[in-house]
Image 1 (cartoon, rainbow, N blue to C red):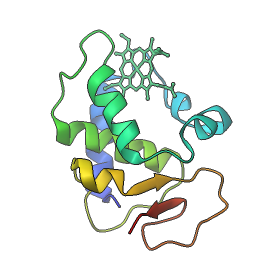
Image 2: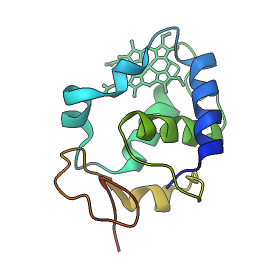
Image 3: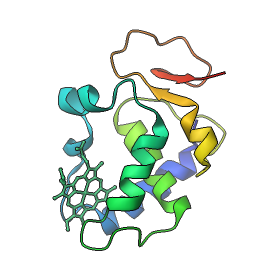
Amino acid sequence: MYSETQLARGKATHQANCISCHNQVAYKGAAFAQKWSGRSLFDFFQLISTTMPQNEPGVLAREEYADITAYVLWLNGFPAGSAELEPDDAALRRVRIDASGAATSSSAGKGLRQRR
Ligand code: HEC
């Protein structure tokens, strides 16, 4: 779903561009799960890439928003793999966020379901 190197990039990019307003806690826990569970990864990517950073929306490259998305997946306990998370709308739409922990059997990783 995302790679370790991408995670490191995402963490650094978040540190440089987002941490002034958000700490990591903003993307974890029950409230976050409730808001995002059942939605696609594209929804999350779209939100951050069009509205964040709030003082300068869309200033980062799509790849950088994908890196941050990977970082947020990591914060939520989705494991890293070998492939990078690509900033590809169609591919992102196929991944559903399941933060309930109910359906965890997927090759895409715990809590993420790839739509066929
Ligand atoms: C200048 C301050 C500021 C910066 C910088 C900033 N944000 Fe935000 N962000 C906000 C505010 C304020 C909100 C709440 C907006 C709302 O709820 O309408 C928000 C909301 C969000 C949300 C929605 C949270 C939720 O579940 O409702 C996400 C995700 C997010 N920001 C990610 C990011 C990312 C990623 C970056 C860096 C690329 C970033 N933000 C940079 C101020 C900022």
